Image (tube, rainbow, N blue to C red; front, side, top):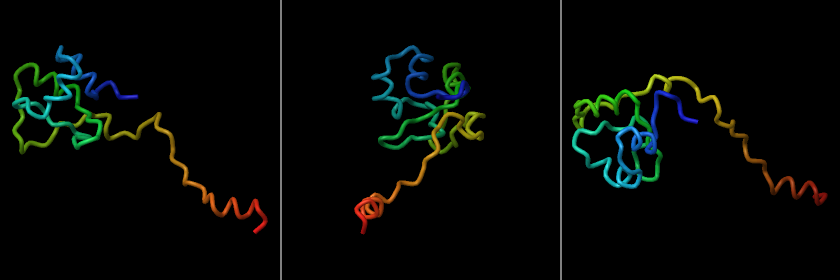
Length: 100
C-alpha cells in the first residue's frame, strides 16, 4: 500500500491525465519532470512525492542535478510490508528427516 502523499506510476498518470503506458515510456524524457525519490532505475518501481507532481502541474521544473523531492511518509517504516524470515536450510532439514 502506498502512502497518501506518495504516488506510483499509475497515480501520477491519473493526476496528470495521461495514460499509464504513455507515462511509462516518456517520464524520463519529459522536460523538467521531477525525479522519483525511490526506484528510478531499470526494472524498479518509482515513487514520487504527490506535492512534487502537483508543483510540476503548476509550472515548476526540476533540473537534472536537483535532488528529488521526498514524500514525508518515506521517513516512516512501512506498515503493511511483510517481515522477511530467513530461508530455512532445506538440505539440512532433508538430511535430518532422512535420519542422517
